[in-house]
Length: 339
Image 1 (cartoon, rainbow, N blue to C red):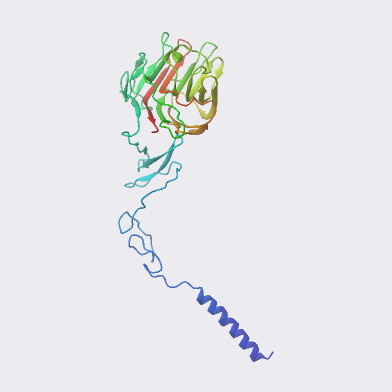
Image 2 (image 1 turned 120 degrees about the vertical axis):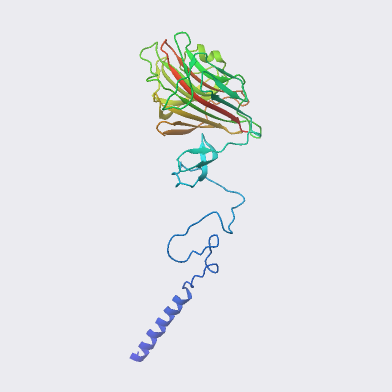
C-alpha cells in the first residue's frame, strides 16, 4: 500500500468516527422543547432552582406513601408530611420545625372509638365509654412527664388501674367488621419498681384484655392464665420473675406467650404503647417507645392470640405485692375499631 493510499484510509476512518459521534451527540437543550420545566421555570442556567407549590403543575389523584423512619425537622416555615408506622399501622403524619411529630386522626364518624384522658386531677375522663379508675389517686405536676394523673398503691390498695366498663374491641375474621388499634401514654415516676425480697415487687400491664377487674386486683401470679388479651407487661419479683425489659404478652385463655421487646423498663420515664390488630389478620403488631429517651422497639405476635370475636377493653394497671406505695402516671389511652 502506497503512502497516499494509507493517508486516504486514515482520513476515511477518522471521518466515520466523527460521523458516529455527531449522530449520538446531545442536541442543544431548549427549555420546554427537549427538556421539561418545573412549574414553568427553566432548569437551564447556573444556581439553585427554587421549587414551590405554585405554577401549572398538579398533584396526582392518589399518593402512595411508604412508611419511613422519623425524618429530620424541616426548616422554619416548612412542614413535612409523610407516612408513619404506629404500632404496625401506616398512618399519615406531619412534622414542623419544632420537631414535634403529629399523626392525623382517622374519621371518628366512621370508626368506633373510646378515649380516656386525665382531667389533671384525681380521675380520668372518658369519651365513648364509662371509665373506672382507682380511688387511691392524687394529682402531682411532673415537669418531666407533663399534665396527668398519678395513681398510687398503698398498704390496703394493692393495685391502681384505669379501664372501661365495656368489652367493645375484638380480633375479627377476614371480611368482618372488627380489629382494633390501641394507644396509651403512661409513666412511672417512682425511683424504683423492683422487688427486694420474695414478698416484694410490682406488676404492670398496659393493653387490651377480656379479664374482669378482680383478675388484676387480687391475683399475684407472674403469668397470666385463664384470660384473653394482648399487651405490655413488666414484672419484678412476682413468683420470682424479674423482667429487665418490657415484654409483650398474648394470652388465649390457656397459655400466655411472653416476648422480650428488648426495650428496658426505666423507672422515672414515660412510655407510649401501640397495638394494631387488622381485621382478618393472624397476627398483632406492636410498638413501645420510651418517650424520655426516644428509644423504641417494634414487633409482631402470632402465638396464643385471643380467640376471634372475644370482647376486650383497654386497660392500664399497676399492682404491688407488698405495702410499698408505688405510682403510675397516666395521661391518655385510646382504642379504635378498625371498621
